[in-house]
Amino acid sequence: MTIAISPKVKRNSAVFLVLAGGMMWVPVVSLLTGSPPGFLRHLGFVSGSPGTVLAWCMGLVVAVLYAAYAVRNIPLVREHWRAVSLFKLLGILVAVSAALVEEAFFRRLLMDALMRAGWSTLVQVVASGLIFGLAHGIWGIMTGRVSVGVGTMIATGTLGTALGLVYVVGDRSLAPVIVAHFLVTATIQPGIIFAAFSGQMHQPAIPT
Image 1 (cartoon, one colour):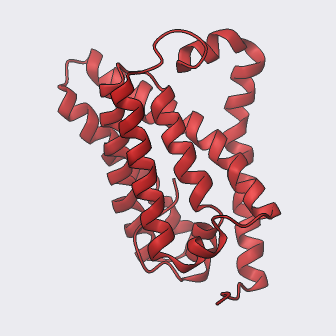
Image 2 (spheres, rainbow, N blue to C red):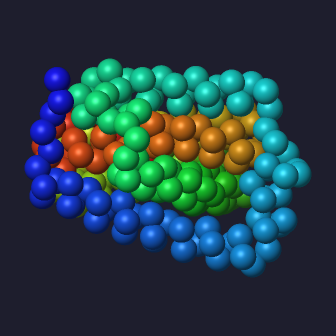
Image 3 (spheres, one colour):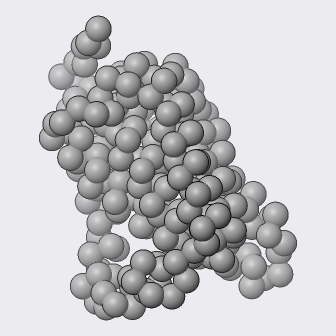
């Protein structure tokens, strides 16, 4: 059964995808055009630490479980996760930029700063997940729904904690967590955005 999406929800979703993608791509383009080899090496894709086999396996498991939960429990995600559309293309573009920017900030910059300050690995992982979740609480403000904001913080906080653990297990390589983050976001968008703006977010598996 197809779920009707109002023109207002489609408009708000499109505006969000364009604005979010645009803002996220600014630092990505800046880094790529400035020094591509260094930027790619820093992420662990071209050279440097690519992460461990265990980290890649853990990242894949985290991505599959999180995305599968959203597909199973949120009707609009289930309806749109494989659909071919302009909204899906925009969602994938946002997924690329979000994975790069958010993982560079919440995992590498934040966790490594805590490590240099002498905090334990446990504190680094938990703090990364907590701040990741709090940052995504802005979804409650954007949609005007407190339940969406709370659900977002719980879901993304859990995801951020899991990715923080993957980052540590992967010898602090961003490659496994970037790929895991991308897989989650590319799968659940744009359905999760439709659900958030239409008030049909019945389960707390929220965008990343």
